[in-house]
Length: 336
Image 1 (tube, rainbow, N blue to C red):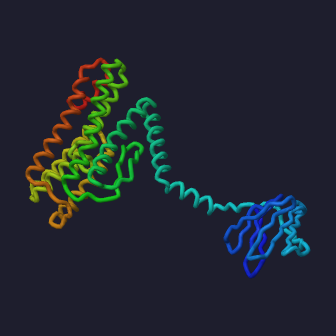
Image 2: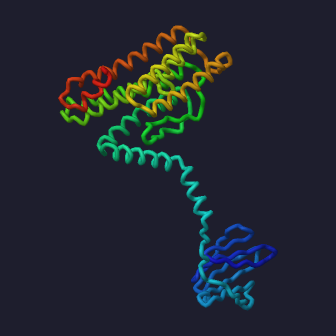
Image 3: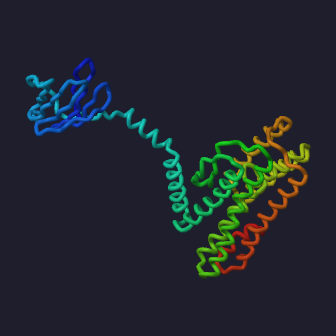
């Protein structure tokens, strides 16, 4: 689209046109209506009659007449200006797309499915991602229950998932409930998988049940930054004594033993991050903004933790004697 500008009645007039006709008419940057005629347009501007003739527009001429005067032909360009595309503009567009939350989530989810499918199979990849999404959705639901704004779920390839919040928690009880709701939703998935397995006799559902139980049981290890570590930390640090710190450090040692036994190098990185979190929070324990658990809250939190663990172990034990080596494998790992 092209434009020509001139002054009429001490006001700036802009005419936008293409190769055949006038498209828009602006006066002082305000669009005004006009009457289309067989050879152009007609409009009234502050009592002044403006006629625009487009008969010779294909030849690059635009006729303009005011108050019935003789047409004045202006040479205009009818070529559509080419958009300037630079590397900077493309980079800016790419940055905007990258900043789009939905694009990031979709890209991470796609990468997760592709990565797990490359390592195992697409069936396993879909089951694993489904279990991760349900687990993280449990965290999100708990956050929303406490009125905490969330950014949603992010799947991280070869690591797992992450439920991101906009606000900080204010009590240890919130930390316990939010941490346990992920494995609790995972337990619902496991139980549902068992029910569907017996209803359909399809081993794919048994696989979902066992996989969900194994993943969530791993997440319940008393190691930061895993969910079980958050529960242990909230209970321990509510004691406001060296007992709490020793309990958390015992969890760290237990995690290192697990890492060494099963060769989980990535877990070692998690443990190091969690250890720093424990030390930093211990140093600032007397100034923490988090409302601690009372003795009743500590007991209830511990019971909830044990109940969720027991549920996942029960699902794994249910398939311990299965002839399918995949279904019996998690219990063999646990019993070792």
